Image (tube, rainbow, N blue to C red; front, side, top):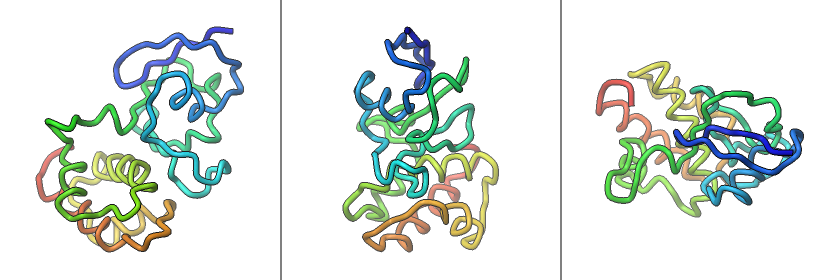
Length: 155
């Protein structure tokens, strides 16, 4: 079966069953490897992408449930030459140790900042609480999100 997905502004036709997890299609069919397979149960957040602007755990989201939704991955935010403000803030704050959780953290932070342009530190911590970081870079991650928020506006 062929399923049509709109990812990072482009439509892709993928030969896959409707119950195939979005994460598998992103990584295996579209070569978008930022979202990571962590737990496979939707509990760690390494696989978070945005679906119509809302954070979604792609490891447990079947592609057949997406319809005409707009999917945004970390690759859709910025480039090496022109990083998204969140990506730039994470680099400046050295918010990644191993980096495994960072794509999911950035996507969750993007959704948070789209809803709340000037969150408090407590709101950032609460907003990111569902994503796990085994390295212990949480404080740097929170600082990076707050720095990106200081850049102003919807980012």
